[in-house]
Amino acid sequence: MILIVFSDVFDYASMLSVVIPIAIATYSFIRLERYLRLLYILLWLSFVIDILLELLIMAGWLSSNIPFFHFYTVAEFTLYSLLYKEVLRDVKPLMAMLIVAFLLFKLSDLWLITRPDQPDTAAMTLESIIIIFYCFLYFDQLLKEKLIMYLTRHPMFWINSGVLVYFSGSFFLFLFSPYIFKNEGSVDIYWSFHAVLSLLKNLSFAIAFYLVSKSYRLSLNSPER
Image 1 (cartoon, rainbow, N blue to C red):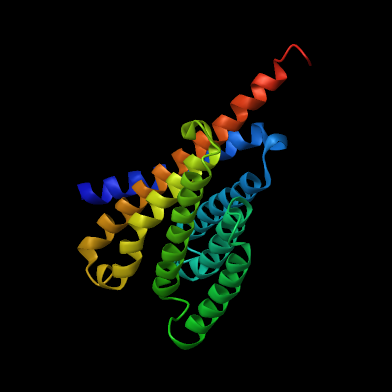
Image 2: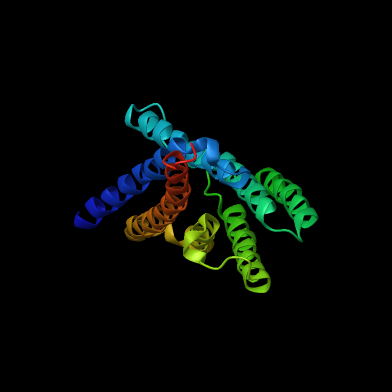
């Protein structure tokens, strides 16, 4: 019982935590670079889908949110890929190919293997592997170019760190989810851990947008204005 309560608390905290980076980003939207606007769109998509599905389930109009996550996985992967395409300089053609390949894989998986009412295990696991690859490519680019003196003052550093933590932890959850869902006692632990990862990711995004908004406030208060 206590575990279920904690699971619900973490779940709702994770769901609502996305409001923080959205609110900060909205304040300084006109200063957002393209990669930050792609993240802003992804956050809104995540928030709207989570709230809508929660309301539909509470109203009894929907018994499971699993079918909708098949769509969300594709949308999430595409937006993250476009985001990293903006900041990674040497692999842009490769990333365009990965988006197409992932979409084809997902369609094949739905057609041949995974039913819409089953967890999106294969696609989510593959998504995690590719996005972790993006994260390491970005850190490798930072180390090679050495253009940023203070990493913690750069928004993309926080975005990349949050994404890496989330997908590194989620990789094992997605990989073993078929076995986890067979054991009812493990499901609450699964969702609690996933919620904590999501919460950390959203807080990292909030820091990234805060750095942009801080720069925006300083420009507004500049004597030159």
